[in-house]
Image 1 (tube, rainbow, N blue to C red):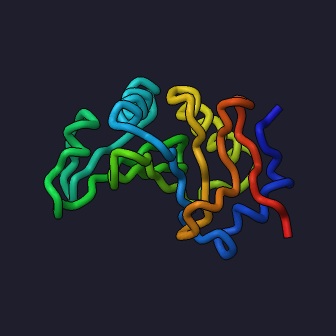
Image 2 (image 1 turned 180 degrees about the vertical axis):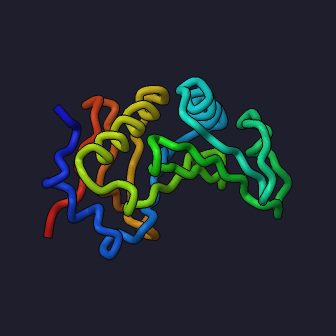
Image 3 (image 1 turned 135 degrees about the vertical axis):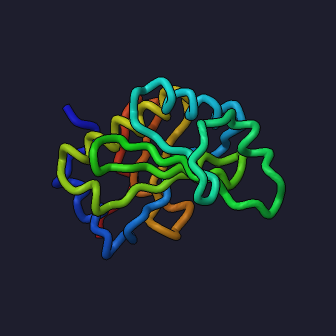
Length: 159
């Protein structure tokens, strides 16, 4: 049984309503949590690409990325959850893991299941919630992995 049914959440995956790139986050994170996510990505067999500016580099340790000098460009880690479904992690701070997905890539039950599986993997590894907010509407999650329920739950009410 899937965590979420597409018919129940489809309106929340409309790029016109939610913005194209909803904000996904793990609040209350640490450098160790970032490292656990990097290890998960490295060990998962998923294709990934770490970039600093236009330069592709090997995936570093989280402590090195998060200790970069002030004013330097924020690195990105792109992770392909499936062909044509990419999550892009941004290393803004050590106390919140931040990444985006493109809602245009997440249409339908099969793709929703891929997203839920990825959120579950991160949440289980960290034993923390993984939340998805509408683009630019930080703090108002629509859905998220709940470690107590061990599944992704719909968190927003419908209009």
